[in-house]
Image (tube, rainbow, N blue to C red; front, side, top):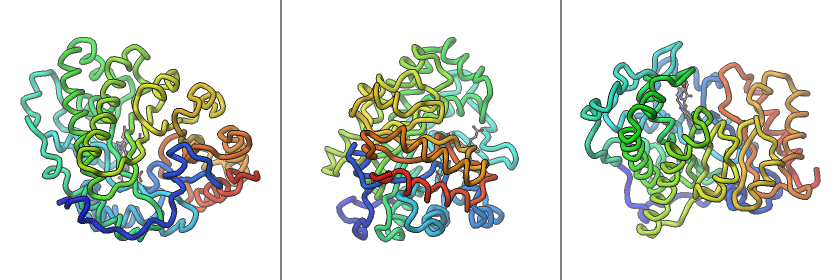
Length: 371
Ligand code: 1CP
């Protein structure tokens, strides 16, 4: 169980590059990490997964810690943040739904929500310390084991993305079932989104109490909604999360941590998100021109991203050229200011870990002030 924040003593932080960039500061080079950095492209991860069920790894703090540390060990000195190994779907589990990892198919809900009557299957009140205390325990253990090398990121899914999974029952191409809910049962949909947002906010606060130093909200399916529907069914709930997390941390006397929003595919909205969402950092996918986004958001937010993950399959020259171009486009007056280098989405299983190492090396080289 997560213990009292003040009682936790962690080793001093040796690398605060990502914290400075998230605050919008100019840095000597861009900090870098990649989404899904603990994952199937690493043979050491596959070795653990060959023995253990996916959610067993999530629920066992020693295993989640081990897997979180794998990329940090392999890329020592090259990588500037760790992200706790877990999944966005632990929140629907905590709300009362069953989620299984089916080999070859991905996460699956054997009984997704069919109609609003199925609300009766959800837990009335979710005690995040009880239901998700295992994530917090993994965070506390990992923060200790990191020995201050790099900061630890906590995360959750955005309510709309979780809603889509809870109703589709897994990944989806057309989002027919979840969108049917939005248009057929708008009020009930909003009730479920709001309920989910409160669980997400409580969970993120618990993660900070346990030792998380930044938080990211993954709205992986943001781009599936029209701008006007996004303003009704996603943005208000991302705003609720940011507001609730910030006020809870203030009330608890815990210093604020940077909040990152990754509204993948909602590329019409960066100006609006920068001004109204309440986050410090916006994650960009690769279908964005960084300089154009910087121009519309000004210095209101830091930016994270955004190389196409598939460039990692293109060989070293392609990776180097793409990083050089990305760095040039993200820099302000030739310097990295408020930029966290990353991919535009998660790294995929077939990538050669040495090619990712090369990506990190190129970021170090091309994001530095002088280049
Ligand atoms: O068998 C395996 O090992 C499954 C692969 C895998 C991994 C490594 C899944 C299944 N989840 C994860 C870990 C994970 N998921 C992390 C770990 C921390 C890290 O290293 O980054 C994080 C942050 C996530 C978040 C997550 N899960 C998202 C948001 C990010 C994104 O990629 O958009 C989403 C959409 C999920 C759902 C999910 N979990 C796993 C898969 C294959 C999927 C996508 C399923 C689909 O929609 O088809």
